[in-house]
Image (tube, rainbow, N blue to C red; front, top):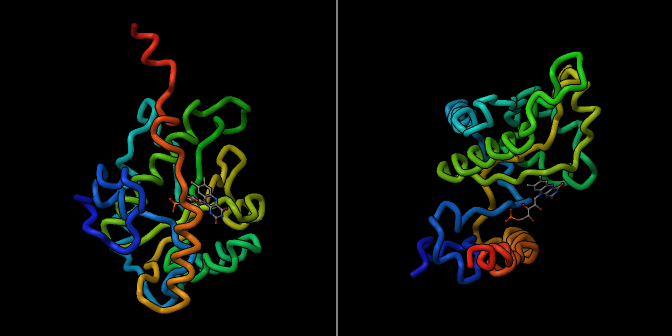
Length: 206
Ligand SMILES: Cc1cc2nc3c(=O)[nH]c(=O)nc-3n(C[C@H](O)[C@H](O)[C@H](O)COP(=O)(O)O)c2cc1C
C-alpha cells in the first residue's frame, strides 16, 4: 500500500510506495495561493531546519534572505526575478534567497570545497520542514543573481546560489489549479532506479 495514502499530489510511479509520505507527496508547484500567509513562527521553524543540516566540518556555509509577502523584503526579492519566475513566484507567501559562503573573504580560496553541496542540503531540510507544515517549495535559479546581491549588499565571497518560493499550493478542484497541477506533474519524470544505481559497483565486489 502506498504510504502517502492517495494524496492528490503523490508521485505517480510505483516507487512512491517505498517512500515516507513527506517524500512521496513533495512536489514543486508554480501556482500558490496568493491570499495565504505564512507566520513568523513558521519562518523561524524553516530557518531552524536549515540550521540543523549537516555540513562538511560543521562549516555551515549558508545564509538566507527571507521576505514574507506584504513586507518590503518580499518586494525587494521579487524585483530581481526573471521573466519566467516573475509570473508565479510572487504569489508565494515567502520568498527566500539561498546564499552559499564560497570564498574566504578578500581571497580567491574556497571557504569550503562543499559549500554549494551543504547549502543544497540545508535547503532540502527547509523543504521538508515546509512540507510538514503543509507548505510547498519550488527552488529556482531564474533570477538576476548580480542584481539581487547588490540589492542586499551581499559581499563577493558569498554567492546568491538559488531562490525558493514557499507557500500553500493550490490543491482544490478549480480549473486553474488542475491545469497547473497537470503541467507540474507532466514535468516530473524520473530516471529509473536501475539507471540511478551505478552499474559497475556490483561487478567490483565479485
Ligand atoms: C537548483 C534548482 C534550480 C531550479 N531552477 C528552476 C527554475 O529556474 N525555474 C523553475 O521553474 N523551476 C526550477 N527548479 C525546479 C525543478 O524544475 C523541479 O524541482 C524539477 O522539475 C522536479 O520537479 P519536482 O520538484 O516537482 O519533483 C529548480 C530546482 C532546483 C533544485
